[in-house]
Amino acid sequence: MKKFLSLTVLSVAIALFAFVQFGCSPQPNNNLANANMATPAATPDRAAIERELLRIENDFPRVLKEHDAEAIRRVEADDIVEIIPDGSTTTKAQDITDIQAGNLTADSWDILEANVTVLNSDAAFVSGRSVIKGGKVKGPSGQTMDISGEYRWIDTFARRDGQWKLVASAAVKVQHPGAAPARSPSASPAMKASPATKPSPAAKASPAKKESPAIKPSPTMKASPRPTPAKTP
Image (cartoon, rainbow, N blue to C red; front, side):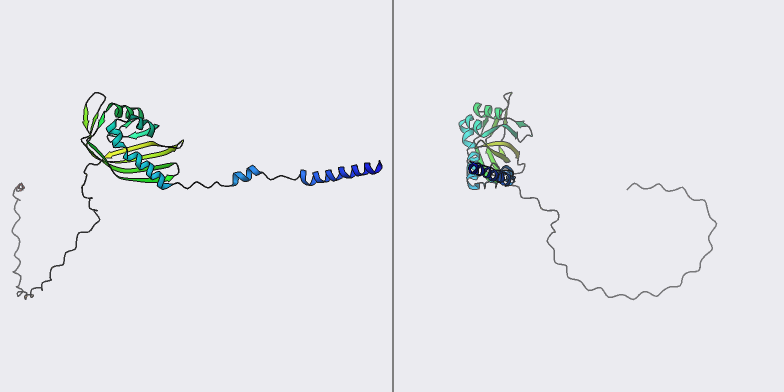
């Protein structure tokens, strides 16, 4: 019995010692360690992003021709910020109405020089140029305005819920399409060859100096005449 009691006491002592050594020692904070570990950003698939955004941009002439309002609903964000060439803004709802009702039409609408800049896996923008021929837009009061011409534009896209959305767009009309770039004012004109230097004519001898005439005494001062009026040039 005593032996059993002794073994029991010894076991309790060993358990207490182990508890003190291990049970009370501070445990590493795994949450803190995980928080301090920086998660590397995913490398964007630039080629795939460029293909998708160029597909969206180049599809607009078809959307316009077929009055595909569903494509506008799918691509444009509900909170899109859109600035049109006259400086005013428009909304997704208005774009849907214009496409569906045929308020915006064109004989041809060419997308040119579209270039995609990828910012990260979820953001990019596209800049480019459009040439519109026979373009017409019908206003709210029924008046029709000609929008033919050349335009520069920039569209900003964000990936939301796995889908690319057009979140901002701005366009300006090119006032002088095809004009040559202005010459820099700092550019120096072409240097011309200096004319041949001609020899200086032979110096002539100075004429003989004549003696000054004798100074005559001044006559009595007379009253000054009336000033002559200035001549008009």
